[in-house]
Length: 281
Image 1: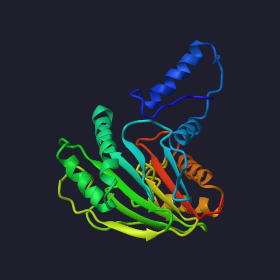
Image 2: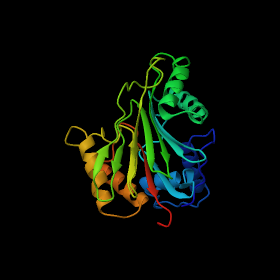
Image 3: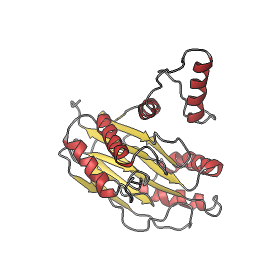
Image 4: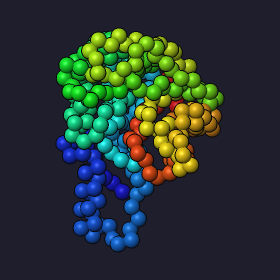
């Protein structure tokens, strides 16, 4: 089913999808008992069109993103900030929902490319936090992780303001957390938080997985939550099976969905990054 979805439209994506489905029903294109597309597959289709793979500095630099197939709301978001020799990846979680969260998200997305253009990742978070603290009201804040990846070297620099530690996943399925030590307060709470960064180097074929806490904290039917250890295990198991990054990320999301069931109480966002050297497919 072909749907035309525009990210920059003032009409929310969920409204664009609903409007087009409604029009097809009224026009008779969709008859009674017609089979609609699987919501998860539709969400993936939309995300692939909104965020295609990016190439940087002659290396193959692939960014794949997935947002929650359950609900499209303002709570979680991601962005990719390409520069001449690197790319910055942002994954964030906005406090609250509705109009206030939408305005907060718009504010961060408008500021982030400008702030990140000429600064290191920790300096970017310190400056972004200073600006947002002067703009936000009470109970408004943004948890945000910002990673800058340089394809020519494989170097990843990460600063983190309240998001879960990203995972690095090896080709054989080994998984390790990438932890930025120091203060981790979300952005906008206090203007003078001294964020620090951590630097590591990706080996060929390793993947960086950034995500919002809605995934590991998704509730199990039996009680409790899916958990960070279970998520790490799902990431490693999928990598050990081989296959491309998109199929791998689809499999991880499906594993979590199968464990927690169809009813979710929080938003999901995940971004996976893989670096491959020249000549590899």
